[in-house]
Length: 204
Figure: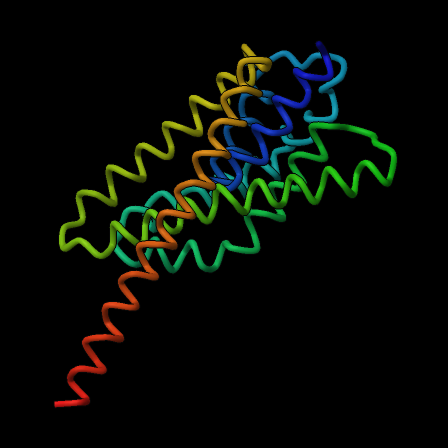
C-alpha cells in the first residue's frame, strides 16, 4: 500500500509539472515550510522543497507565468520555451519524491517521469494553440485559471488521498494523450486544407 501511495505522489508531480511546474513546486514547498503538511517518513526527502531559495525562485517564476499564461500567443511562446524545462523539472520532482533508488530503477523512473510530464505539457500547449486561433482573450484566462485549479486540486489529492490520486493521474495522462492525438489530427487536416487552397490558387 505504501508503495502505491508513493507512486501516486511521484506520478502526481510528473503529471502536474507538465501543466504548471512552478506552481507545483511553490505550493508544495510552501505547504511543507509552513507545516500545513506533515511529511511521512518515506517522504522526508521532499523537505528540500521547503528551502527558502527554492520557494522564492519558484514563486517568482510562477508570478511571471501567471500573467504570461493569460495573454494570447504569449502563452504559446511560453509553452514552447518550457518544452524542455517542464520535463526536466518533472523528472527532478519525481525522483525526489521516490527517494533513494537503485541506479537502474532511477533511470527508468526518470524516463517514465519525463515522458509523463512531456505528455501533459504537450496536451496543455496544443490546447492553448487551439484556443489562440479564436479571436477573443477570455478563453485564455479561463483555461489558465482552470489549469491552476487543477494543479491545486491535484496537490491536495496527493497530500490527503495518494492512492485515489494514483488512479486520477493515470486517467489524466491517458486523457492528455488522447488530446494530443486529436489536436494533431486537427492540425494535420487544417494544414492539408491550406495546401489544397494554395494549390488551387497556383493553378488559377
